[in-house]
Length: 152
Image 1 (tube, one colour):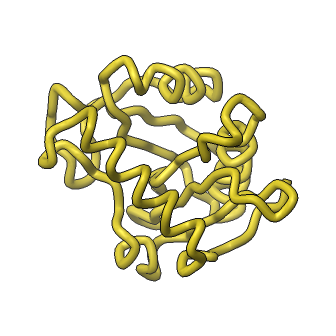
Image 2 (cartoon, rainbow, N blue to C red):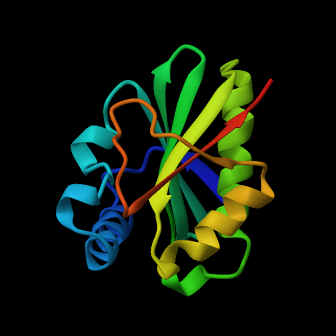
């Protein structure tokens, strides 16, 4: 597994981001979808990673700085061809490591509440994330689950 910073303009990455967004829209109303678009992922407060297996895109993930002590996990997605190969776990470990390097005290995320999001919820729980109140700009939403983890 090869984790690369960026690659946002790679055709495979763009396709996976589009699939991610469409999938979110299939489970939640548009106002409850908080996936970042390509332009937002290129902001200076976001670091984006792509994970490759034998030069095939396996997954993506990002870390958005909310403030100097708090980061948000964004755009976690595994390519359909690489499901159940530990891709999401590897990306999450990488993001947690980067958050430690950046000396964040807390990591948070928003995920969906529908059954399709159960595998993601379970993975985050295995890494010590717990359900929390909305953070940052988020508001309570029946389609959103908010999770956080204190680190450092």
